[in-house]
Image (cartoon, rainbow, N blue to C red; front, side, top):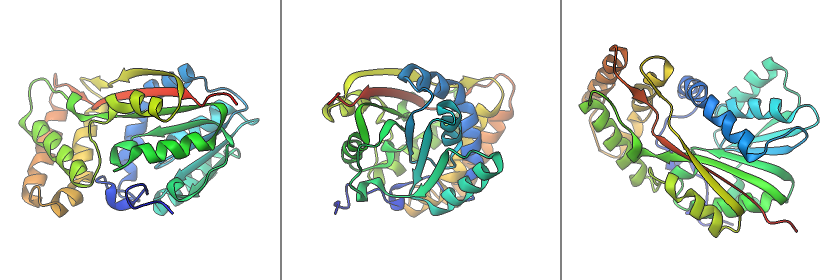
Length: 276
């Protein structure tokens, strides 16, 4: 059995899950999709592959993976949040995607067999006290020569122009809340080293940071602040009154013409399990 530090656990997550967090995940996936598609293609996704999407959340990328591997391929999407999985199953069923299966599963509590050609994880390792243990499990789950693709945040890369005190406070609260729960809000630059230490070969990396003067990217900061409110209050980092004020100011900033909204810096890395 894994130790508590190895196990995926809902208590480590600072962002609200379930139905309440689904709207944010939809917007996040749309904002990230151009860079995500580019990443998947560079990492070698192709028709006929068997893929694992771990920490799949609402399943938006899972559905796209199923399209990319085509009817001759297969996608298994896993998350520990049973409500998210139930929503994802319902939405995928409406889209009629027969080569996609959702599972409520904690990979850390299994002994995976080498059945996947391609494993994808986004914004997952940042929440874990021991991300290296999960990466070791992912390596086990890959067939020899299979590819692991990971994307995660470096929250230090957030920026705004003109400068926004509300954004600076949001970044500080998010950063501290993740640290209090045992995660690393700036894990992004560590990813290539983590993959190399786990025995992956041909490790590569890139950086993505969606930003804009309009559109949904400008909603990411206020939506995320709303969705970390419970964790911030539980960790005694801010009051509900302060959080409401920050959220209001972030929405005002997002609506102002000429202001820049962005995602945190996202580091992407990928590598292969050595051939047998």
